[in-house]
Image (cartoon, rainbow, N blue to C red; front, top):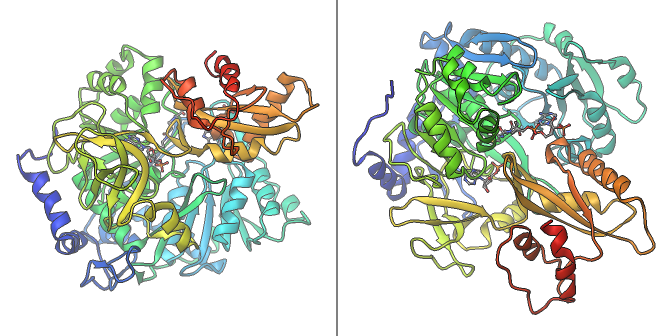
Length: 640
Ligand code: COA
Ligand code: AMP
């Protein structure tokens, strides 16, 4: 069943070409995309260290994702399969149907005044309108910014103020196994919190949720016009693709940085189209007519790339799954999807595999399904621990491919390029760098470290097409955040090593970003939420190891002197504060009141030492510590 070719030189030759002659390599890759004006140049380095790809090319990414498949006789082939374990709904959109939906939704946006370069925020659950809305924006040359449904009102407001959208697209609600999530109260609150006024809010009514557009329109603090999606859509003409420059923005996706404010990663239309068209085939081994299930959320980068754009660029079928890996109804959910939709490549997060393993340790549910079409299981979003990798490989009898990447890169930095050549798997490693990524390990001074030595994982500039073009509205923040730590390199913020065969092992972050269930969150942002409580004098949030979710956040708070509130009630309030400020997705449950936090004499909280104590690792008390007895007092709290 497996179709990848096995050759001894395929990948390494190709990788060398991509670094030695990127111009030829990427111009050739660009031939797999339909252009209105094909590029004559690949890389524009005139403003290094900021780079642009295909500077003279013009296109619209949706032409390659939709129209050209109609012209190639694929109009009646399935493009998108929506499968909801939450409602039991299934619906297949052919390429013709998906194109029509996208064109009508684009028409609806155009009627709201959205045009090339305008921003649109999309706050939707995992329903077909989410990818359709993304593609509709792209079709107009507008810029979408999807906000994950698990984020709270304040996070939506931050994104509204940064992206300054004309329109916000949302639905009346999302469905979680434990509850129904009403979206409109969060949207209304976000509109009140934001300084920027969104002109139009379009609401898709979902059965079982209250919409009350009349009440919302009457809210005095909100100036936006509220519209019913279906009503607006019914009057919308179909909109054709607007040709844009390859360097025009396709989308902004906000991600956690080390500060309280999320970073707006943006990428372009042309480079993204080329990189995703290349990687879906070379890495994920998906071609026309084949089916991929990326069990993520469209709110994350994995969803943008491998639920929406890449499979459609390939003329493949993508499965949009609304449900969880376990509990909807059981740990066989993915295997049902594989059988029912004849999935070739399944892509998920290690957390999901751990959750399945916990519920079904002997993989008995696998036996209930025909998985003969499945060729690969891909995992990304966090480190894939060897035990989980082994378990999944034994259970499914397919290669389990760890791949390492970030919101910023948009596609894998490292992976096993099974579409070109299946390389031997080394447990714990994301295998080798993908085309165009020159990955190095640097010491704190920027000197390259030899094989086997752990250090900062950095990528020599320029990075390949499809990676971030910048941070929205802030060139300087882009340079400060990624390009200034090591001159000539993009700093990933990850730590790891490269072995003697060139295999890359990613070990963890070097900053205060933590990864909870494959979701990237900032401890600094959680601290800022806790600090808002009137009883809290100071606080620290650190990431602890969690068997299921990889990491979980734990907060330690010192109360203002004289404040002696009931600790149980306080802990409840603090959990709620993080939930209300950041969202349920932070899953913030552990919080303890402590007498003092370990600090240096200059007042810097020793979070790393706290982390080491909590993890039971060796640690050294810095000579600059203010009061060493604090360490003794806090140790039993950190390691109960
Ligand atoms: N909208 C609203 N709330 C959401 C949400 C969404 N889209 N996604 C998650 N949440 C909420 C959950 O309802 C839960 O709220 P609760 O505290 O009221 O129960 C909270 O956020 C934490 O949810 P989750 O992270 O899903 O944890 P869980 O314990 O419910 O489930 C797993 C555990 C492992 C099954 C789940 O985390 C999972 O499927 N992980 C895979 C994640 C993934 O695919 N990441 C890919 C990134 S590449
Ligand atoms: P995000 O931007 O949300 O995709 O998160 C990116 C971060 O997740 C990376 O910087 C890594 O810390 C982590 N990550 C993603 N994939 C992997 C992987 N395969 N192995 C180890 N860490 C990973």
